Length: 342
Image (tube, rainbow, N blue to C red):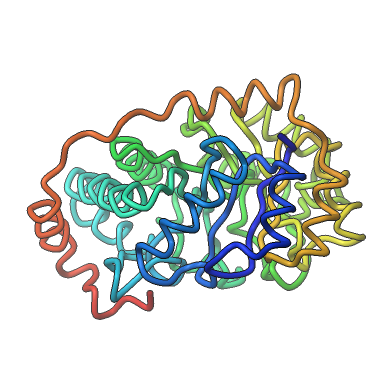
């Protein structure tokens, strides 16, 4: 298998995609709304991908809640944005964390029923005033300790449901003044400020199995290269200062923050120390570029990939109806499903 995760174009595998998957052997699949129809259709797509690859490859999705929710009504419940959990935490820390954990457990139940076993959440970004709203209400708060506590509770709830979390966007997207989907964010904060806030939120979470890196330039550390393609950021900040030892994947390699061809981006991310490259848009020409540039998984990246999957446990029993009712009750005053943009 090769060191990349791929997207697909639609709700069914095309003939070209089937051939591509057999030949390229990506490590995993990531799903978006364009891949989602009815539950059985989505389950069929996932089963088809795994059968084509010949193994139970990890299937990822961004199911945060709020405006980043690939599954939603009418087939799946809506979930709160991160800020709603933060508001509840401020009212009552213990109740807030219990609600977060239950929310994660319920999301996991939705995903596991479809065969999705990795959720790209929690977010440990710490936004500041004036930052771009790409993070905005996705964030759990503005204090590192609070953010880390809520992120840990969300990850624990997912794990109880048999779904692996992906911590994002290390080493921090909260100060970015641009949306990395469209352009390159540049953060000019000094190292001390970054260590005390942005990086601090990730340190209590380093035992999580996977993390996604931010397409952000931190001029105090590497004035030129965004974190994704910066060996200095990966080695000195993510691995050493923050202390994350798990599987490190890029954010979507096709986003506007990065420059160069898709193949050049892929090689640069791997060279910087990313274990896996993420490519999301389902464009076949780009997918082939990524596959040609991504190496076979081996050595430390392979060990970390295997270790990440090995921590997944069977879902604990849950009374879904009672748990959904309890979750909604706990969120009263902070969020109502009708207010969700999912």
